[in-house]
Amino acid sequence: MNILGIETSCDYGGVVPEIASRDHVRMLLPLIQQVLGEAGIEKPDAIAYTAGPGLVGALMVGGGMANGLGLAWACPVIPVHHMEGHLLAPMLEDDPPEFPFLALLVSGGHTMLIAVRALGDYRLLGTTLDDAVGEAFDKTAKLLGLGYPGGPALAALAENGNDKAFAFPRPMLQKPGFDFSFSGLKTAVMLEVRKAEAAGKLCREDVAASFQRAAVDTLVKRAIKAANSQGLERIVVAGGVGANKLLRKEIAAHFDGRVFYPRMEFCTDNGAMIAIAGALRLAEATPADEIKVRSRWPIASLNVPRPAH
Ligand SMILES: Nc1ncnc2c1ncn2[C@@H]1O[C@H](COP(=O)(O)OP(=O)(O)O)[C@@H](O)[C@H]1O
Ligand SMILES: [Mg+2]
Image (cartoon, rainbow, N blue to C red; front, side, top):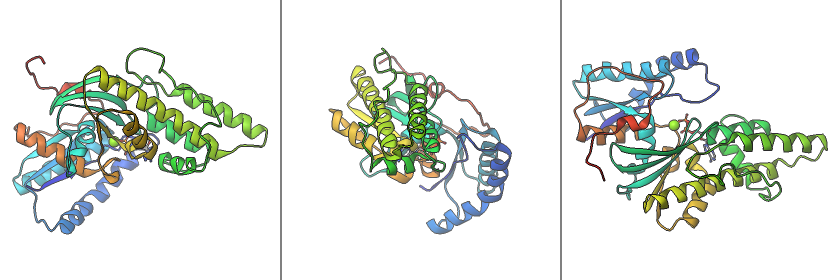
């Protein structure tokens, strides 16, 4: 079966909603034509689109396009939750994870630990109390004069730095539960950078390496503790920050179970993850025939009623 996945959540800081929406209107149809052309498909069997969370204007462009094409092609149209797309992205790989698993969802807008027992059975164990981890990468990168999104550039800079040069805080690790907080780390980095700049001896590589180590340590320890507490033997790492090599290496090194990731290009926002989530949802439920987008949408609201486990 061929499913077209449309992802227009545009869920990150620094985007001007009006400009983003207009750009989506301009780009979306030519992009769909290009994608179908490259895949050698005249019309897909179904269309999946991101219905939220995200910028409503951009979501409406994707939802409107999906429903218009669905009408023209007389095929089902499936609204998909953006974060469900991220956590199901490893299902695109040849060796997909089986349920149940712990999902560590780390992106520019979200930091979440979710116990996933089945499709549509999601329990949020922890989230960030302030900045998302991708946002912390981006803000630190900006402080070091790198462009946006700064995560990949910061990770590259860190490769030539000493990760023990600065003892940045590992926030929340002493606290019970599975929540995160990254604003203290961000402030600590800012103060050290100002101090080093004033002294005329700022080593950007060392700051990048020490920051990355502190952020990764926090994610890895919290995720493994959450998986163990729930008796989960698999961890899925997804979302843009899931492309981080140190994160992948450290979580695999410290977790006794298996770790799964989408390939690099399916970590950051992409249409394929929306298509696979749509495919799995299509098999399970009848799609609704209305255009519905939401800027906020708690992932636990996707849960279908099930007997207690
Ligand atoms: N190698 C990397 N290391 C750390 N962060 C990364 C890396 N690659 C991408 N990121 C971060 O991932 C975030 C984008 O994730 P994505 O899921 O595409 O975004 P969104 O939050 O908009 O859904 C950005 O904050 C970016 O800096
Ligand atoms: Mg995303």
